[in-house]
Length: 277
Image 1 (cartoon, one colour):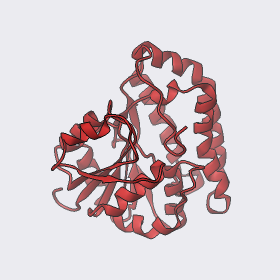
Image 2: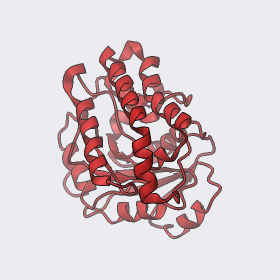
Image 3: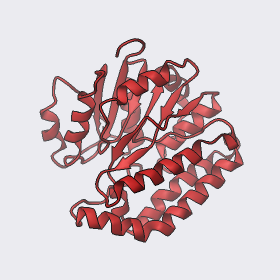
């Protein structure tokens, strides 16, 4: 990347044959080319490896046998050689200026990590829901609890030095979201996480295709992460996670309907990346 840092982009993958090609095309098509793209396969049993065959030579492909996105993420970020480490999901689609915006964010030497909002490309009223997502993440970024203590795994980057600092203490038991856990530990180590509303990406809304009980368990993992680290986070973080989960649970029927209207039931729900349920 021009001007300042080399950017590595890590994509953990488990059974993503339907999404991975579009994701990698967007990463490789950045207006400011990234330094390297690392895909970490986490025991895929579908055609993921057939998709990856088309990208050999342009993408570094690794395997991580331990199930769980936390292990695949760690494998990829540990192997990355860039000064800044991007981390996205296999269903993330980046706009062409994403790498440039990441570069600009890290030109501030005080920034240790950055994250941003997402839009949804496979749900009815997607732009409206994207605005809602951005509003919630903007509210989460407000300084009422002090420095930010969260990251969003579908759209984030961390300085390699900050990653190495907190890597030994990160939680890997799968009981809470790995991106939230990373944010908590970065904040506790004195790191500064920035929220950039202009650092946008798109992703699938397929989580809403879950059964209500599975969706509820997934949402409550954010709350669980803050509960497990009570001594490290402000009380407001737990309250914020509690309120957000209940809001989304109330909206579940509407969100599910909007998803079905667009997808027609053709898109399957996403396995819980932490527990694979």
